[in-house]
Image 1 (tube, rainbow, N blue to C red):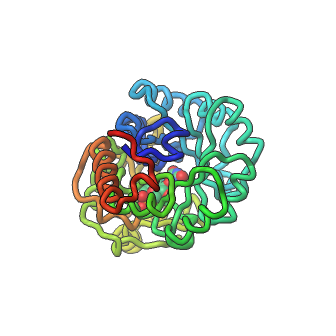
Image 2 (image 1 turned 90 degrees about the horizontal axis):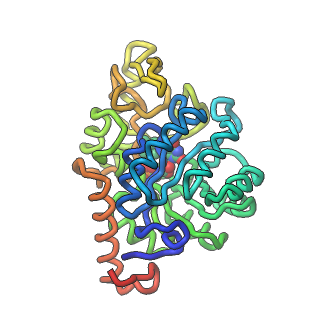
Length: 341
Ligand SMILES: Cc1cc2nc3c(=O)[nH]c(=O)nc-3n(C[C@H](O)[C@H](O)[C@H](O)COP(=O)(O)O)c2cc1C
């Protein structure tokens, strides 16, 4: 068993945090990951997902499926009205979850962190630079997720994960997770050996059996490798100036698509919403249309997605592989305290 400052603080047994991924991280996935001993994260960045009434339902569904610690992820980007989130949603999240996480596209707000703390939750911040990590900790963040440029989905990081991790570990004292392109036990072992307290894994879980995404999307992941992803700002319509990493095939399909609307996405209240060409969003299971031309987010670790597996299998495979490598290097006692399994 791998114990780190992250597992101790959060109360889980595996140093893996599943990424909050909007519709890609529904209650079923978050709960399955938490039940497997890692930290499951409920995604809220979905049409209507951050509204208190809808969020309360998502929380209720998650709680019905797990009694283990889980987290709730939000994106804050003050540059855009569309990402303004009601305070009531943070209150609901902090009352229900062990970790409330903010993907920080704007300066951190210490009053928000204070509100989350007062309601009993930890604050995690995903950042893309050392400066942002320092600012988040100065504002009260308990956990930092350092995101490298190899990450899938929206990407704040501008450099590779190991270079960023080095800087962040020198600069902050709170537990640090590494994110971006980590899909195998080898990669998990590497960031643990480098001093991280765990890894945040997104793309690998998109193809989990409990995923919320459309099968056309998860099947495309099975066929892709790192060089089939591209860092771009092409899917910009509902969130401009926000780089992201997608499957190159989805970008090419969107470029070749003849019309303005590629398909439809049901929102949480059941109404169908058009999905425009070059809009960004996670194509849900029940989306329709040219799924292959929607923003199919994927990180550089996509080559590790080789088959459909349950979230529990993914967690145990990553943890066992990492632990055996750390033991082989004689590093397990030093970097990630190995308790008796
Ligand atoms: C499908 C998908 C959707 C994502 N949506 C979000 C999100 O809503 N909030 C967030 O903080 N990060 C989101 N991310 C980024 C992740 O938090 C994380 O940085 C990334 O998945 C790590 O890289 P990996 O995908 O290579 O594991 C998303 C990633 C993917 C793949």
